[in-house]
Image 1 (cartoon, rainbow, N blue to C red):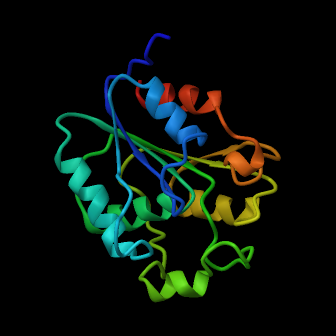
Image 2 (cartoon, rainbow, N blue to C red):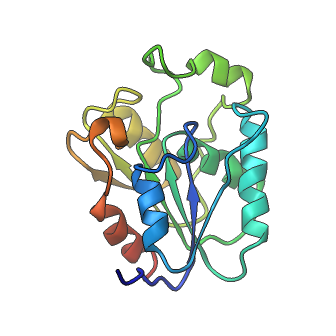
Length: 188
């Protein structure tokens, strides 16, 4: 299969569950010609600061333009990274951002445990690069309204995905072809 060409290097930023072989981000990484991925953390897995530093380390290895593709808590990591660092970014696809004020299912870390690890308060300033927040109408980690509020605060375009759950393998994703279209739009 021919690789998807982009002018910018795409940096994949997974959420707290790291890399899962059947996740759309992992499948997308295999499709892209110019791509890097933030590696899994061996220690300090819930530390927001450690995750932001991991993003910065990967960005320091990339020359030229960069597109960020983040999912779930990876979206929150991008907001924290943008509040701390000043590197030009061509654009960001921010998929299924979780709401730190919501009640999450028991098998996820609690928003309280994340707050203790530096995730709160979430930076809500306008991002200094074009961005698209792609949100579900039935995500168990964030209501569509909460995702919309994040998009508005960050100056992001909001794309309504419909009822796609948390856009992960448990919700049936797998391949997510729309991601490629949104990346092309940001890469123009």
